Image (tube, rainbow, N blue to C red; front, side, top):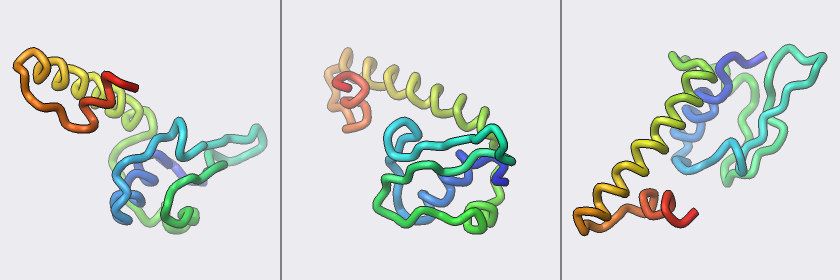
Length: 102
């Protein structure tokens, strides 16, 4: 069983120089009714899928719920930044532009 799997996957990706990924499109987590927890069902990143041992080697302070909340807040902040830059006539970062286009 891997507790707090989302922040551990984020730590694994950070350690392997992968900063852009999504749990909606790149990584699919699954939980079977008879399972002891959540596991990686699908892995579509350029780095190797981590083993349970690799993920459990990361010590994280966030829970899965806190990770999700932080991601939602980051999107809100990014949209606010994009809006402020558009109003000021400043250039947007690629991530800011993606909040408008995608």
